[in-house]
Image 1 (tube, one colour):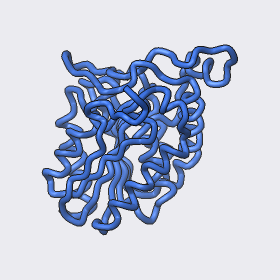
Image 2: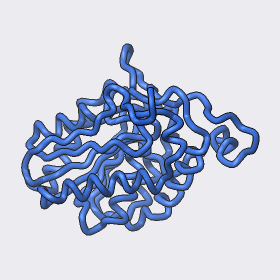
Image 3: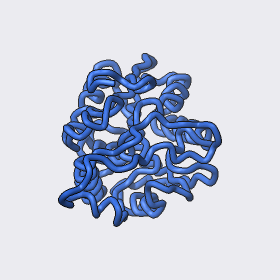
Length: 252
């Protein structure tokens, strides 16, 4: 596979619906495959849905190694601009780092994002092993991947099997910046967090819920899913709660 070739399932998607738009964002080393079911359910509720592919994802680890957190933010901003062309009311949701980007976008586009739904988002990594490779010398180009943390048997996430070491520095920076921006997230926020997560510490859920500046904050715990909850046993619950949350704000 070349840097220009997409992994099957990594294609960005756009589902035209009404004038309520939802931007759905995949996570670190993952692809749009992890968000397609949720996107389809949101579209089934009538909404216009866009699922961008973050730059450097869904290709090769080498392609990802050449990208930065700014590239990932720019990928989201481009999708947001495209969504605004046909939608007057915008919501955003995302998994893992996609949830981090959801919070970042809600903070930096506070006048645009009407509601945020971060799913197993990270604002404090708290992983000594990851920290150890972020700025070390003489390290390998890649380390084993973190994808497919899924409780449901037989389900596989389309994600890199190896993580480029330079990318760890970028995700640390994005998480830290987003953590400090939480008070600027003033839109209604539904924080969804798995109780058992082998990639992101579950303490991130309460940390986000207590840190955002919104007057309306809800924390939904998932009891039957691991990190990639949008492909796991609770995916239907996530879709139902996300749709109900959006309807409670948009009125439809």
